[in-house]
Image (cartoon, rainbow, N blue to C red; front, side, top):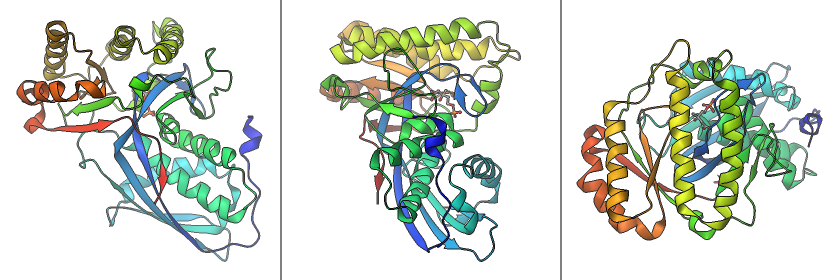
Length: 357
Ligand code: PMV
């Protein structure tokens, strides 16, 4: 699908409309780090869509007499003008694809299921939920809309808000970025893994160990930027694509040892890029490393196939198959919680994607 498939018609009969969508967060197993304008990834990525960590967004669309788009954003009912710059950039990028927006005023209200400032990035779930509300309105204006285009354009718009948000529309596993293991893959939107996903990954568990709930010293926008003249960028982009191809076949066979090797290597490669940027930076905390050591020790002693991945932050995502849950939960409570801020962690699992509420 080419970029011009995403340009909608304009509408000459504006209508009032209200809609509410819930979209999940996602955790990348193959990491996207480095992009070009407009939000085109330098390498393909693959992620687990989560289930409990979601953003719920309601949008009220009110027609305006003169063409001059505006919006108001509130979080849990409280107006948040500090979110306007990011949203302005998003709307500026998407208006060429949904030009009817110019005849509306939008009232947006969002809330997250996960605790506020828990260090969990909400931009993926937030941009996905907002994009679905916009697409729902577009479908209302143009009822002939095909459902396949609805999903793809929602992912396409979400990508323009935050790259990883493109992967928060569908589940349980999605690809984003052109790659040789999926001919339908695209840099413009995410696509689902497909029929061949091994059952073990359909209800995989993710416990997010909250090491640091503060804001990050370097944002992911700055981090992506630093990949431009990074000495290892070219080899990192090649490595990510190779890892993605290998992981895509592993996720069909269910080889958990192979899964662990790639997933942990990807997490550490992402952080290695941060540590070797100019300027260099470290987002891990001492507890991040202590948790990693404890995970390795537990895996060695018990042969239970748990592993970790990291986002652009200090928190650790502990990944494990559903059938190991009782033993892993005891390990979390007895050992890992002690390294978390106020012993806090979030229990989540792989999910099926966004829903209309
Ligand atoms: O979507 P962004 O621009 O916030 O970047 C996300 C980058 C990582 O979370 C580190 C990796 C990924 O693929 O989600």
